[in-house]
Length: 256
Length: 296
Image 1 (cartoon, each protein chain N blue to C red):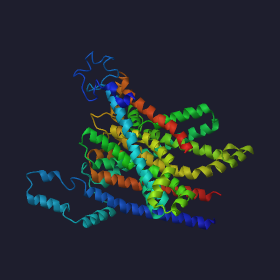
Image 2: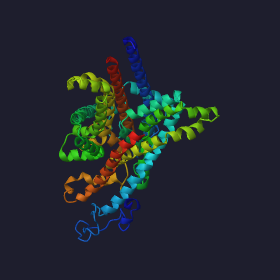
Image 3: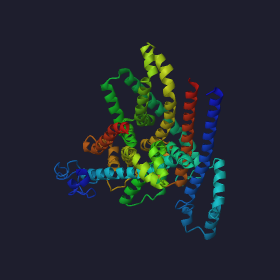
Image 4: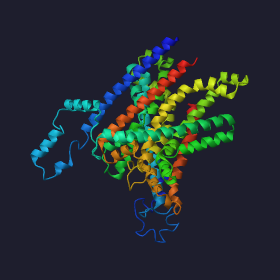
């Protein structure tokens, strides 16, 4: 909750420099003032961590929501309609699944301008993941929709004169709701990790905006880790969150 | 189903895959050509900004680059060049893309194959040990270990590899291993819990005989499919690992192309990688089908 409100960091905005000579200034190096220390530019690390956590934990689910919506739309329509449309959707999905995802992301990112404002870079990074990360979910949703296609309640609805769009929206989709939720939760850790990879490579969230991936760039200088072990905190936080998803999700998948 | 029917089905499946690969190559070439043609700054060269060049010289330069040709002619030229193996020239490296690919592909291929070897060996070993012990402590610790590795971004694994002076293929292996371990473990557990395997164990068959005669025939097709998928995962992991470990492979090339917005290069690299990946996945899938068809 602290991360989401970032109240704890309001006295130290994540982009403001605390002191020009931060490495020598005893006041700036004190624990009370900067509990996790400052980075090389004198920015408060705790404030950056809180802001970065907010970005990663709000936008990864947003990207997951977008990709799940696309997958739900395509997968349920393909499974419900069947025939040529299903074959085309599944062929495109197979093709996308065969392609390493990072290559695709890099290609799309290369088409967009790199000298954008930090806020735009955040939107681009997560929008790109949301728009390109639906493939794995489509297969699962399509298979489930195919199972629902010949059920009795759909036959009854069809005989009552329901149009395909209405059937899809009011009869097929509600029956697949639990699957949509599962796919949404599965996508979140994937997007958190992808954002981290892209940002470390300089193609995700741009400085001075903070995100977990961005903060992990400080991890490159291992020699500084002994003196500043707080630099490990973003990594520890990321691993804990993603691990929680990894450990909790299998039990959810089983219940589906 | 008779042997002849099985062989015919296999042949149909292989032909269908081959046709799809051909369509993918043509469709991919069109997409690549479109992306390159409509990219901002297409055909604009630094030489055109040089005030020493006259208008006639710039016009001659543009004629040479065929910027005035129609779209249909452009596609025709692009496809005919592609058919001759000409993938264009990289904007940032100022070298033919084909030459760059020829240099970089073996480096990545080598790292990926060796990394996959490590990952498969580790996954199979850990899963087999889990099956042999079947203790909760071992299960919990191996699950926690693979979850921990699964939670690390590939780029962080690459940084650790740089620090520990570990080779690139080892880092790729570390990234791929947890994804394989989970699947291999659950597949083996499911196979060993089959009634006919339980019956064989009850009859006192040797563990080797049980594995080769009863477990492997069930597990091989999905494992072969997983082999194809693991190639895709390994190639994806190669980007951050090669970029951060400074290994001159395809991953590093793609990263450099993305950073310098070198569209002809990144688009063609992605196109070639997707063709290779699709071919690998198709081969793995066909091998799985052939294996399941050959077993009674």
